[in-house]
Image (cartoon, rainbow, N blue to C red; front, side):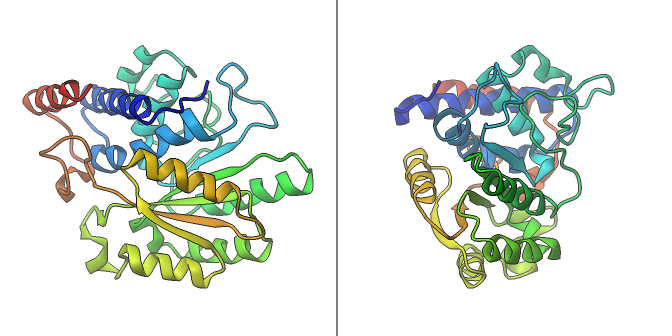
Length: 277
C-alpha cells in the first residue's frame, strides 16, 4: 500500500507524531525531540518509497531500513504500527520490561525491524553489508540508513562511508537527520557539524549528495526518487529538520532530546497535532 498524495502523507505523519508522543508519555521516558524530527522521513520511506509488506516482514527481497540513531525508536515503532506491522495499542507499552518495544529496536522481537540498534555509529556498517549482499546475490533490494547529525561524531561512520563508496553501493541511501541539536547543545558548536559541512564531507567521500528540507514531504519524495535513479554512487540525503517538529513548545529546544512529558505538556501537544488533522 503506497500513498502518493502529499496531503495524505502529511496526515499520516501527523498520526505517527501522536502515536510516538503517546508511547513516550506512558513510558515516562524516551526521546521526543529527535523522534519528532525524523517522522516525515520515516513516513515517506514506509508509505511511499520502500518495497515492503507488513504481512511478509521477513521477505528476503524486501527493502531494508536501519535506524542507526536507535534512541529515536518511538518514531520507528509508531511508524511500524501505523503501517500495520503490529497493533497500535502496543505503543503504550514502550520501555515496559515485558514489552517487545524496548528503548532501542530489537529485530528479534519487533516485526519490521531489520537491525537491532544500540550504540551510536554502527548502523551504516551494517547497511553496507546488506547493500553489498543485495548486489552479490542480485536480489535487487535497496537499503536505507537513518543517522543523526550528532551521531556523525562517531568515527565508525566515516570508516563505513569509505566502504560505501569503494563498492559503488548505489542501492544504499543514507539519510542524515540534521536538526542541529544533540544532548548537550548545538552540533554546529560542538563539532562544526552543520548541514553545509556535512554535505561537503559526504561528497568528498564519494557520495551523491542532496540537501533538502527534511520536514517537507514533497522534497523527500523527490530526493528518494533521485537516489533510486543514481548509478554507481551511494546517496546521502542531508535532511534539514527541526528537533521537536510539530509541537510548538518542543521545536528547536535541546532540552527535549530526552525529556518526558507531564500531563499538561502531553495534553497540549496532542491538542496541537489534532488541530492539524
